[in-house]
Length: 571
Image (cartoon, rainbow, N blue to C red; front, side):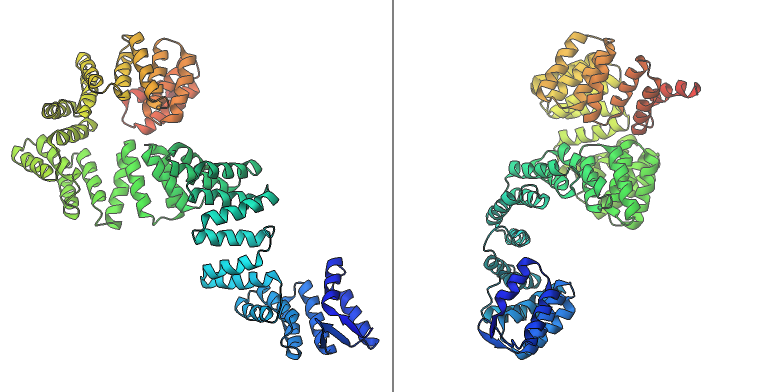
C-alpha cells in the first residue's frame, strides 16, 4: 500500500459520513504501518502536511474554523500550491467572515486547478461586498452549474434585480420555485420582481401564494400593500398596510404611509390615532405632528389642533402652512388681529400660498372694509385665479364657518361670472337647505344635473334632500339608486339609501345598508344614522356607541349631544 489517492479517500469518508475523528485515526494507522507516500492528484505529501490538513478538516467539521485555518496554513507552508489545501482554507476563512483573505486563497485555488463551484461563491461574495455587482454576477454564474443551489440562486437573483436584470432574475427563480414550491422567500422575491416588471397580476399572485402558505408572512403582506398602492387601489393597499403594521408595529415608515392614506380618504380619526402612535415612538417627527394637527382640525377639535400648531410654530418657525392654520384657528376664536398676523406672516414666508389671501379677503368682507377686500381680491386675480373660482373658494370657507348668508352671496357671484360652473350650484343647494329654502335647494341640484347628467353627487344630494325632509320618497329612491349606478361603492350614497329605508321604517334593511356605508366612509352623519337605527331596534347600548363616535367627529353637534343626554340620565 505504497500510494493512496488522498482526494478520493477524503471524498469517500465525507460521503459516508464517518466523520473526521475516524478518518484522522485511519491516517495515523497508515503512518504507523509505514504508508507515508500519500498523494493528492499524484503529488507526494509529507506526513506533517497530511496531518495538519487532516486536523484542519476535523476542526472544520466541528465548526472550529479559526483552528482549522491555522492547520490549513501549516499544511500550505509545506505545499503552497496544493489546490485542496487552498480550497479548504478559503472555505474556513469565509465562514469566520475573513472574506478578503478567503478571496486571496480562493483565487489561488482556482489558479492551481480547483474546480469546486463554492470557490466562485466566495469570490462573488467578496465582489458583492465591494459593490462590484456585475463582477459578482459573473462569478456566481460560474458557480451555478444547476439551478438547485438554493442560496446561490437567491443571492444571484437579488444581484440581478439590483442590476435591473429583472427578466433574467425571474427566469432563475422560476426554475428554483419548481424545486421549492412552498418556499416563502422565493414567492416574495418573485412578487417583487414581477412588480418591478409592472406585471402586477403575477406579482399579486405570488404574494397571495405566499400568504396561502403562511397567512402572517410579513414580506408578502407588505408586498401586496405596495402592489395595490401602485395599482391605485387605496382601500386594498391600506388594508394590507394595516395588517403589516400589526406584525411590525414600530415601523415608522409604514405607519407614516397609513397616516397619509387616511388623510387622503378623509379618515380623520384613524389618521389621528396612527399619528399619535408614531409620535409615541419618535416625538421629533414634525411632519407627522403637522398631519396630526390637521386631522384634529378636520375633526373639529380646535383645542387640540391649536395646541399642536402652536407647538409646531416653534419647531418649524418658517413653515407657511403652520402659520396659516394658526391664523384659521385664531379666526375661529374671534381673535382677528392674531389671525391677520399669522396669515400675513405665512404670506411673507410663501407669497404663492393663496389660501392666506382668501382668508384675509374674508376678514375684510366681515369687517366691511371694501378697500382691503378689493386689494386682496386683486391679489388673488394676479395669481391667475379666475373670479368665479375666487368667489367659490371663499364661499366654501364661509360655509365651513357656518356663515351661510355670506356663503350664498359669494356662490351666486360665482354663478353670475360662469353659469355653467358646477361647483357653486352644488354648494348653493346645501346653503339653501341650511337656510330652509327647500325650493331653491331643489332648483340648484336640478340645475347641476342639467349641466352634468353623470354627476352622481348631484343625484344623491337631491335624493337625500327629499329623504331628510320626508318628501317625494319614491323619487328620492330613484335618484339615489341612479347615483349608486354611477358609483356603487360610495359610502355616502349607501348612507342615503339606508336613511331612506329608515324613513320607510324598514330598520333591518336600513341597518344592513348603514353598516356597509360605515365601512366605506367615516362620517359623523353615518354614525348618527346608525345610532338612530339601533335605537329603533331597541339596542340602546349600540345606539349610544354610534352617537358617541359621531360626536367625536363632530364635537359641536348639539343634536347628537341631546341624543346622548337621555342615555346618561338612565345610568
